[in-house]
Amino acid sequence: FRFIEGDITEAADCKRSCRGVDYVLHQAAIGSVPRSFADPLTTHAANTTGFLQVLLAARDAKVKRVVYASSSSVYGDHKALPKKEAITGKPLSPYAVSKVVDELYADVFGSGYGQPLVGLRYFNVFGPRQDPNGAYAAAIPRWVLSMMHGKPTEIYGDGKTSRDFCFVANVVQANLLAATAKSAPGRVYNVAIEARTSLNQLHRHLRRLTGNSQKPVYKAFRDGDVRHSLACTRAAQKDLGYQPTHTLEQGLELTVQWFENQAR
Image (cartoon, rainbow, N blue to C red; front, side, top):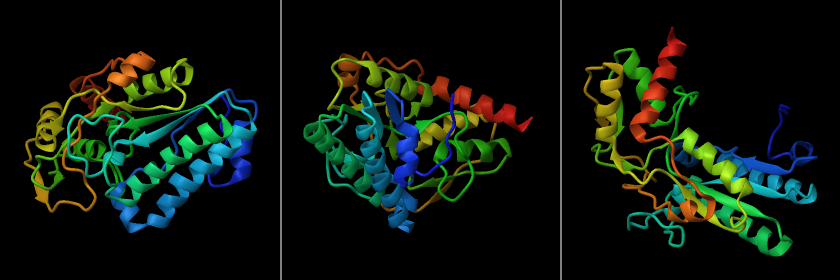
């Protein structure tokens, strides 16, 4: 294991990281929709310019394959469920735009340079070590920390907004398979568990696991939030052999357990 501290928007750092490497699993991004509205330039720099620098460095180093993190946000205003890879909608945030552009760059690098690339569209990844602090923290770690301290949590909207929450171990599996599968290059795949959970349902799960008795505080809907999200993962199952190992409930139990252990 070799750790290199650097910046993906810097060509020299990317070249140094790709030197002598067979496979690149590119996860670095600013993943917040609200933050992308507050600071679209920084989101673009990290998610688009940084991605392009990684592609160039990987190409020049003759890396065998690049697997990169895309996002379910590329489905935008397309309302049909479940989401299938071939049909996307209009992006609803600067963050979503950055991921759409990444997929377009990957397609061009694949056809123009013959570079083997695989995109993974993540659906609401969660798990241990996810940062619960900061204005743009994801819902699950933020809620867990609040509930552990006996505090109420905030839900944006009416709580009926739904997501296909995916435990991080499933995402790790998808990355390793995408890096090694023979039929994958040039494709983009959904990574999720094919189960839709509303924010109200998620809140009830976490209250049970943490023993919190506080009711949620409902706030206004946020700009750019997709109302409902549910993935079809048949393509990933067929081409990659992807089979999720953790359900939402199993993932939440492990996540809450990890946060509780950190608090001791």
